[in-house]
Image 1 (spheres, rainbow over the protein chains, first blue to last red):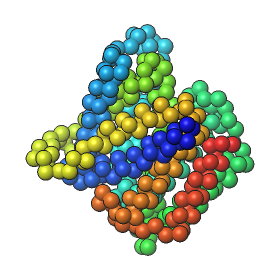
Image 2: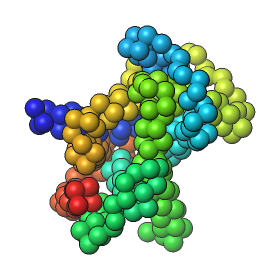
Image 3: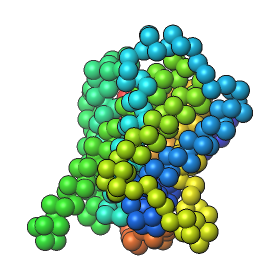
Length: 149
Length: 155
């Protein structure tokens, strides 16, 4: 059963480079990477509207949520998603698919280690150790190999 | 490689690293939003609506237009328009897999999938990407990336 979910995770991962490639192509077609991002987000919004209505049967939530949560909870995800998607669209034609993926992965791992180390966003602290350092070194060598050849 | 193109490539690589740093922060923020509104789908929707509004502003500033030549819609391949739904599938699968596999295994599986398909896209030059054939150095690089991810995620 676990294996089935792992395969699910693998397939979910294949989506990102395909999406980036498609959006890059869309950017060329409409003549602007920003307009391409906008179209992608807009169609995604419509898809989620239908999904939310059919699964949750509501689009509302408790108003009290506004008072107990900091402002960045509401805008952070969208703003960061835009940075990520648009950067990917701009980088793909310049770096190729593999190099775009591996550099963003390095950034992802570095940030994840920082979040764990300092316990940001309420995550339990997980201190940096030798094994993690070797892991980072492996990833950097991996990027260099993919970049050079 | 000339000095100028070397600087350009280094800038793009650095930019990629910074863009990647955004991703775990986004996940942390969205997880909190999910608790706040008590639905993973509603949380994704709020995230997408905010992103769409921000992109309307950015597009208006950089391009000074929001107009799309409508005639390109029928003459384009259908898959040109599915980037958004793919993003939705990605976000939702992550949310659904996380409690089933745990964070470390979810991240490892997703990232492996990501790199495998990226190597394949480069190899065949799909979606108009410049062709870049798989060679043993790229395979070793791929194996090192996976080793690194496993070491970081599981220890």
